[in-house]
Image (tube, rainbow, N blue to C red):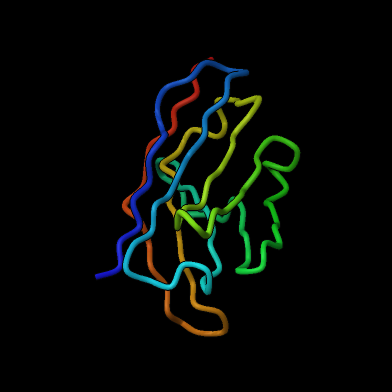
Length: 117
């Protein structure tokens, strides 16, 4: 059974940094496009950043310049480096794997990020 397990969330002060990681198992990781989403309380889940299976990245406008997505195919992990954090990024962050050009999608269970002012 495919598993995506996020880690690295927590409580941090404004201006601080966090590095989220997502470990994937039982799927051909190097084939999948990967992404990070977030969901704040009372809001819909929204896209934060994506990285394709060949390493092309894209970001939501609200995180450009502050977040960096990366992947390590040898370790089956995707990471999200989050810098200069502000309270408005407080949310549960989810990892998603998508098989290219298909509806095959897997989600992790999320890791909470809280930025205090």
